Length: 340
Image 1 (cartoon, helix red, strand yellow):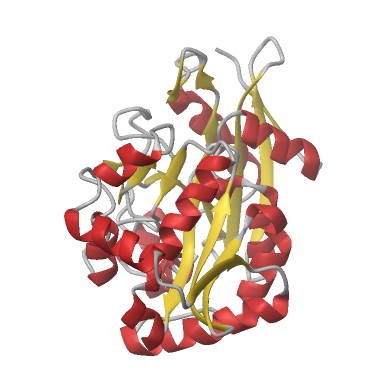
Image 2: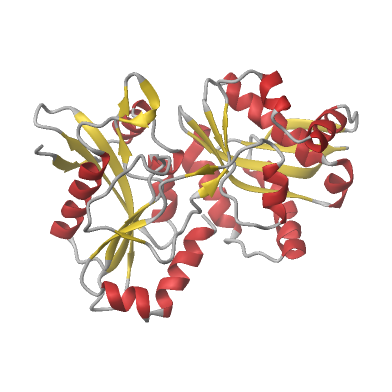
């Protein structure tokens, strides 16, 4: 099947297409705008079939590398492919999702020098077959192992799938009269959340972007990056920063101070956000990855299952061996992306 790849420069058309195709929020225009403001460049392309129908879309980020390597091209939770009309949890089989990925990779190779085109499709393992020209990435950015709640289930079902401890803490923290949960509306309110995030980072020993990055995410994604905070006596004790499309809600960042820990505010807060996403008609709530740390233990209590996505795949270009085998820059670039 002949596929045509063309750039898209219309934000409204792009976001409408990604959402119509069931794409991930990291494929929305605002996410690329955020990355473009922080050392990357973003480009968006539409993939059409011979009849002119849009069968795929891909926002990819490019990071310039030292000569002669050119750049590293990465599609966070992309490409987006058309979904099966009878089963929206499955990609359409005509054209094959791998053909869409190949068409995007060929477009990249024809427009720039890149050591690799790296993709991480938002599809279940086995649902995104790729030609032999693709290789499993040695340095994935987003973990394939995650937890995705099916928000088509009713609230009683979602609660029943939690561990006994999580059910108890959700109910107990939700009855805590000193705890108030409300949506963050202004940058000043976001800065209060970032103070909690800094404290969380120091306590848990993980790195952060500069504060301007999170302010830009809040501004550039707009309504597609809602933030909720739990307050005690007007002070933020926990927050949860999301990204959302029409189909998927995705956890970006979150933190909690010592008061929030004592009150187990993260249980009431997360359940509140899950319910908010469900009320919007979103059908998937992605916890943002499971990586065998303390946060993962907390995440796993929300359901009795795990999900495994298609993983990270590279279409190699010139200099790929140097990039994967011997260049410390590769690790630095991937680490910067893992902070999202």
